Amino acid sequence: AQKITQTQPGMFVQEKEAVTLDCTYDTSDPSYGLFWYKQPSSGEMIFLIYQGSYDQQNATEGRYSLNFQKARKSANLVISASQLGDSAMYFCAMREGRDDKIIFGKGTRLHILP
Amino acid sequence: KAGVTQTPRYLIKTRGQQVTLSCSPISGHRSVSWYQQTPGQGLQFLFEYFSETQRNKGNFPGRFSGRQFSNSRSEMNVSTLELGDSALYLCASSLYKGGDEQFFGPGTRLTVL
Image 1: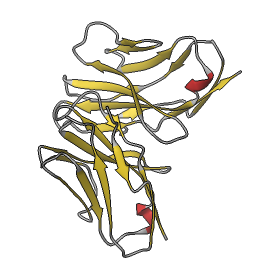
Image 2 (image 1 turned 60 degrees about the vertical axis):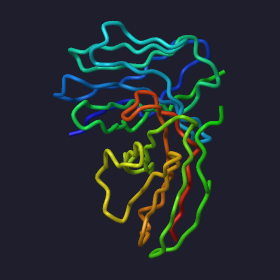
Image 3 (image 1 turned 180 degrees about the vertical axis):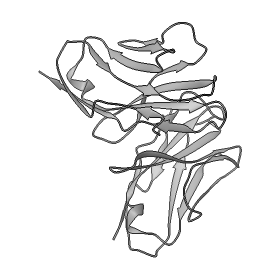
Image 4 (image 1 turned 45 degrees about the vertical axis):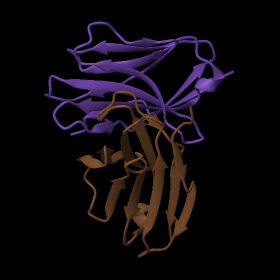
């Protein structure tokens, strides 16, 4: 079974609109961390945001916020006021406490339209 | 502060050959992780090194190996290359083992003919 599921292979969004990228995860480990990375066409992975399983508040980093719904095992990335430079591949990832490996989802390709 | 560097950036090899990729982490970072990215399998964890010790390994055959030096630089070796090894190999560094924030290098694009 997939541990990280990103159901949106591609999305088109108008510039300046808010974007929500979906991510659901599967784990029985009470201790885990959730990440979002951005990969532009250049190929380099850029860390965006992190949420720990015990964190009470949703993580935020500038225009990025993580909508963490623990009971639903959901960790959606919200990008406010999208910009053309946000066009990229976005990956959701999880690290479980017991084996410490990072598992990535298949990614969502986001296209921001002018 | 310089970012993570990977050399070479591009590599073409033939089946059966072996290859060594290099990764220099951000200064002060002691953890280095390696990932393989392919269109079919996506991003897959290869291994993580911390203080010259492999602390974690993904589900890859023994042809894939690595090491880390005392200056935290890391090398990854793939022996007896197969066509399916063609991929982007990414290296990431973090301050601590199992670090939450990983900084990635630009990757090495390996093509096996």
